[in-house]
Image (cartoon, rainbow, N blue to C red; front, side, top):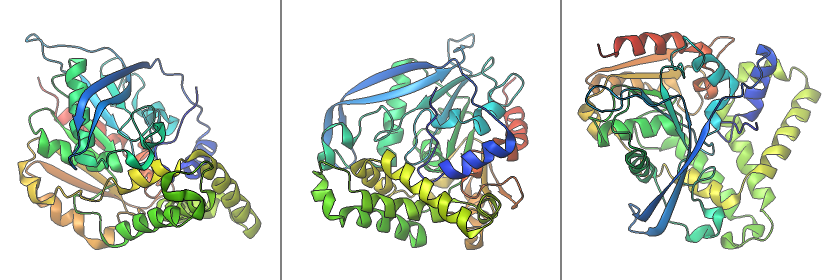
Length: 361
């Protein structure tokens, strides 16, 4: 089975982590599914005759005495990821095994490909830059419609990483009665502005300013623009401590980055990259945090360069979430910068306690 890492900026760091931990991918018994959402309308007013959403599931669905689903867990991937992303061993091998917080013999796990990602509808399917300009609200609404078609009327938990973290806040505000608990990992519930938006704008502009992009009508990928974009994701996403350990000499550092950029440049579609990088443009759950009913366990790490703790945003915003708890993980030998959200061993005990705390008896 081929595993596609959760985010465009993490393959190098996660590969290093696996080498250190000696972990190999488990062959999880996933089932594939696809829903087709007819005449799907986006927030921009654009529409598609059919929006396809692909997803994976693990485990068996269970219903309570009243026929309501009581064990479904929605797992949301990061920017540029897919349904396969959270099958990464440093996540799945820690959380999905018997007795673990997301034990697949107990829970029914749902892992969707977001709009613009994986095997779901995306610009590179053919529409290119004529594809509707989706955002996180569209993603969450389409996920809810997907669950409705699947017959899943309630969620035990929504856990999201990075982009999925931001979607978790949108879920909590848009459908406050659907879930028992929320676990957003590695994000902030504020508009994407400051350095974060600057990074995203640079990524988009570097692709668009590559002459090979041709307004999105390229025959060959604009590799220079994509390569520069990957450089920005790499700088923002990686942990300095882990990079220093992985490449302690000048020669090793240069060889590593060359391998990383060669691999990532070959894997990315330019138009898809523009769309999913820009999907956060109007994200802002801040004004409605008080409307979140579900308990929230929100976890960031101190070495996250994308969501820097020195801004003090999380400590302020969590006070407005009625049942919210914020944890800032200190930098350790186990944290992975922004990618700590996938290194489940670092925070699994918090999740286990939270699942027990929010269990309905």
